[in-house]
Length: 113
Image (tube, rainbow, N blue to C red):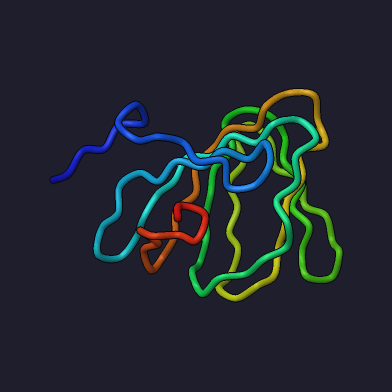
């Protein structure tokens, strides 16, 4: 078993005011923590990984492939299918915090370079 604590890894500012921390990665999944400041935007992108996540603080608005908004807040989980274009915005007044899980694992994401 491998243990990786949030304090063991450094957060990376992947885009302005969007902080991601790469955590544990196994053979089939990986996990990252995220913090998204008020007013910050994650630009539209896609990846071959299925992405599931959980928001435990704040409210995040996902923008889907047809411009459809989906709002997730504290206690909400979400799933984004592989290769589906998506972006996100923090339209609220507080930091959004949560975790993402990727399958297959995403141990070396572009933002970590």
